[in-house]
Length: 151
Ligand code: RB5
Image (cartoon, rainbow, N blue to C red; front, side, top):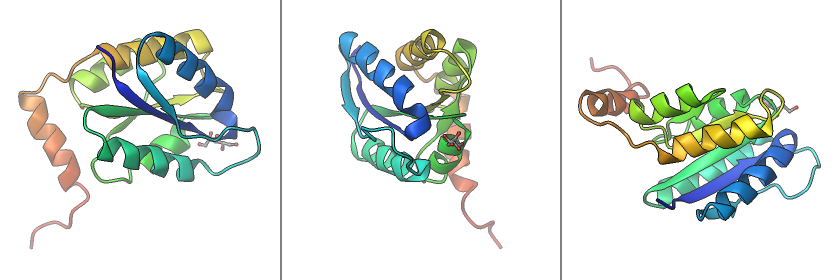
């Protein structure tokens, strides 16, 4: 099922982002590359914020964020309320974070995994549906982690 996908990176994730955009567009998804477009040094939180806000504004969309390790992007994205970003290094993590966490942003590290594996992780992430049930309660509780404890 084709999805709307917003992608962003920093300079260290530029090459992998381009490969993912090409693969996902060829697979029939609606792909929007939110930058950057050139290899000059940029700050990954800026692009995390851009992609996360588009995901929140666009029903049924997902985000893919790429930096050198994927760690900075996942830290930044998870500060945005409503975003559940998962840094994945294999297909198992991609499948489980969709099934159990209803992750809406996938983070990848260009300096950590190869393009073939990254593409395969993205495919699994996009084709796996949230299981719901008891996991919905836990996903709802994730948002409450950011709120002050009741007196
Ligand atoms: C950039 O050098 C690097 O720090 C960034 O891409 C990322 O790995 C941060 O977590």
